[in-house]
Image 1 (cartoon, chains in turn purple, brown):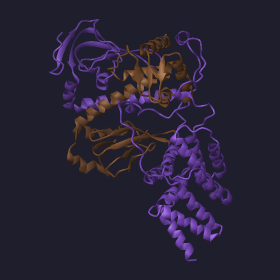
Image 2 (cartoon, rainbow over the protein chains, first blue to last red):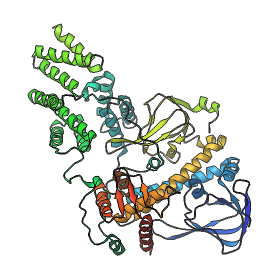
Image 3 (cartoon, one colour):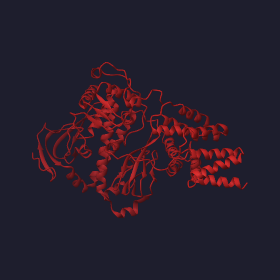
Image 4 (cartoon, chains in turn brown, purple):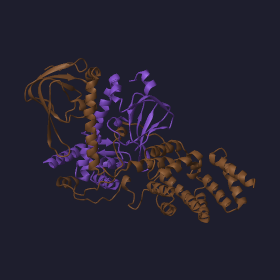
Length: 383
Length: 214
């Protein structure tokens, strides 16, 4: 048995029956080819713990996946008949298979079948098999980008939705949304917010590992604690919180998800229900951070906008005024002023309408909303 | 690794900044190879867009489409002007025949994916929520091969992420973490968890795993 140098050339080893090439959980970047003899790989089925034995035949590779993926061996390789094994480093392996693409193709097919099987098992354990409806989810992606003011991305999702589901539940709404985006109406439909892309999180290794994660909250938590667990954890099992991650009161609801629920109701013209949620947000006593504070402000604006849509103008005026009073510096105020102007226009109080349009223009002359205000102002003045 | 320029004439596509290349939940038929520019892989989780990865020249994405037409599990968005090669499932074999380097790359990607998925399944199959949470920490510790398990181990992870891995409700995870914190087993911060003795967690999870199969 020679060990050879790890980077230079392929080495050959001879193993006696009963010996082990590697154990489960060993870490190594070697890949093996069985030249002659017989080797058995023994692993355990994850779901049942059942032992699985697999024969390696002369000419076959083993130890490939764990070496390539750089993770511990998942099986034990035991020699049954005297065997001659070629030992390859990753670099050797790469050189070798680049000349034999058919081998790679064969491996890829085996790997992809395994991946599919594991993916299915994961979804099964999570009870996800039937819950996700890709049609609805695709539409929701469009809605997300629409609400975020990222209209190009929203349009892409709506268009794809219509391509794949031309006559489905949300087809009409998707068509309507695209029209709103193309006509520029979408801009005034949503509260103005900077349309810039969010900051990109650093691309660290651990982020990479979340590519497979799903947004799951359907697993019922099992309360059982094994004996040794008790031993380990001690007897006091109260979960009172005295440190930062857990110190939100149980009543504190997730403001951002409430907000988006309400937006979604609004987009489906369910104004009453949307209002109820927005008002609940206004009743939140504690705001955890800046992001929540922003949503809290937006909820004020949205209440005004929802009343406006419902034609309840006095309530709308009240809501917009409250926003401006509580948050004199809010960037939403321009849009609130614009809405106030529209309300007074509808109420035929043209002087008031004009003065509000003028305020909008003075605050945002170069922005789309300022331009719209001056168009409307011109209209009013030419009456 | 850069592929033959000639391929670009046949398979090349270009995108402008912020263009969606494909969208989460859209059926997937193509996979992509980046010639130039960067692409962001994002997923909308709890109404927030989360960046899963940022890819650059030489990287491959959308490779799950090789298996079968399944809805995309994330969206790919161009960060800047991007040149890509787009391949359909049908001409996959021909492509790889001509580009063994790409084939090798895919082999590595699939190996990692399989392991990650298996490791996650192992966590999910545990029947005790506290052990699931501990095993998420074990898994994170395993990802750093240079970690000294004799010492307290710092894991960059949030409660939400642990909940995702473990397939549990965030509140339940929080309770467990609070409890472990109180017992002095871990120390909690907003963006990280420090585990005093990760070998304890490994021992507990391993012995449970053995007894599950007994």
